[in-house]
Image 1 (cartoon, helix red, strand yellow):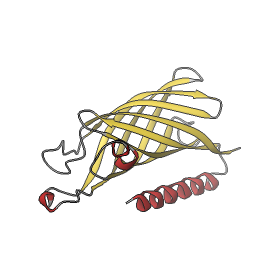
Image 2: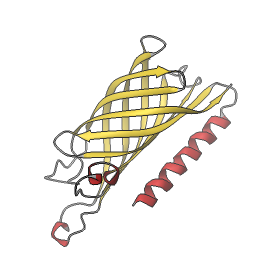
Image 3: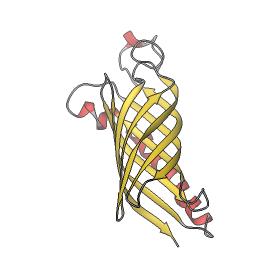
Length: 183
């Protein structure tokens, strides 16, 4: 599953860079970095994230984001956790208050997979679609960008139905570094 996460992340990063190069008549940026998510009432999943912005998308007010999260990079580092993989694609609307500070709202969709590793859990779903809403704050400093958001998974299992490892409410932090800028 770790290899699948790496392949997904690399493929999306290549796609974002290609989109950046194709949009040569406008200014664009790609940010990438780690993501840390804590499901309220459950455990941590951590991974990688990237965002693409372009001046053609409402003057940098819209962005496209990608996040890949895995439990082995979270709670499973210190305790036994069900191996889970969440892959999400988001459309993000940004609101700048100042040059260094703003708010964000994102709609995301994606896919989640859990590997329970025990025949006892064969009746519980292993795969599920994801869809949700996320809102929060972001800050910028030179080539760095940080976000603190709260999200709600509209499709969730909460340990009782569907994919048991997808809880509805989560808190998330991301740290981005500017990896590509055109013009």
